[in-house]
Structures are given as C-alpha cells and as structure tokens.
Amino acid sequence: MAPETAYVQGGYSAYGSIWGAYLPIIYGVKDKLTYIHVQHYNAGSGIGMDGNNYNQGTADYEVAMADMLLHGFPVGGNANNIFPPLRSDQVMIGLPAAPAAAPSGGYISPTEMKKALDYIIKGIPFGGKYKLSSQSGYPAFRGLMSWSINWDAKNNFEFSNNYRTYFDSLSLQK
Image (cartoon, rainbow, N blue to C red):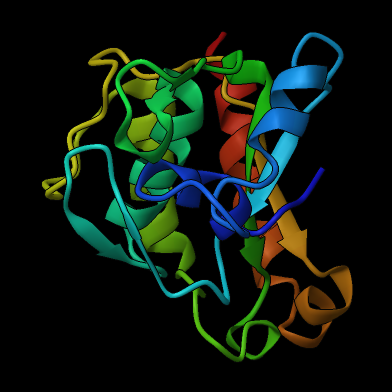
C-alpha cells in the first residue's frame, strides 16, 4: 500500500474528505498488512505530533511522518479517537529516487535521509527539531520504497546504491 501523506498522516490534524481517508482501511487490514510505504513526496509540508509544521525533503519531516505510524496518533486531534501504532516491521517510507521524480518536491539527499534513518531505526538524534517518540528508535523499521527504479537508473542508481549499502550494514550489525 503506497498512499499519499494526506490520506494517512493528514488525518492527524484534520479528519474528513481526503484527510485521513485511508485510516479506516489501514486499521481494517493492520493484522494482515505486510507493509505500508506512504509517499513522502509531492505532498508539501506536514504537521508532526509535536504540533510543528515540517517541510517535505527534510530529515525532520521523514522522522515526524514515520513516527505517527510507529507510535500511533489522535485522529483529527481527538484524544478519544486514536489510530493505533503499526508494527515497526510494517512501516516503510516512500521517497523519490531523484529530484525530477517529484516535481512538487520531497526529494531528500541520501546524506540527510540516513540521518533520519539513524534516528528512526537506532534512536540516534541528528540535532533536528522533531523528537522521536521512542528514544531507542524502532530497530525493526522496514525500509524505503523508491519512486521509481526508472528514475533511479536515470540518476545513476544513487538511491539503490546508497540505501542498499545502508541497510546491508544494519543486517551486519545484528
């Protein structure tokens, strides 16, 4: 499942129309869901659970949007309507493989994304504004989805070369 952020994390700040529209579906299949990789691009900014607005294409945005699915969040700000956390092995992040793959923004350099991944997976802060809900991180976090392999090829495989090495190094640490 690869919905846009408005349909998932957008349900944190507002619930109705497109905002959070996929939440009932995700909730309904959460026990059968292999993984979800929300598209963190062509989306503009997003409000984190700390109430701050984060711009796509930044490490803070990646961490804040992932944390909502990993920690759970009040739907539409209603503390009585909580979208529960997904297992960390069910959560992935969808990224553009190259700047041109996301004409409305959201490309993040591998250097910046690795900072976000170190925080999400290992709990190693990078000095950003957003504070992850789990201080120790989410070691079973699933990974990344690329839009798309064709854009990656056009960009000399920057995406797959960088992130393959990163995720391979994690499996060596186990």
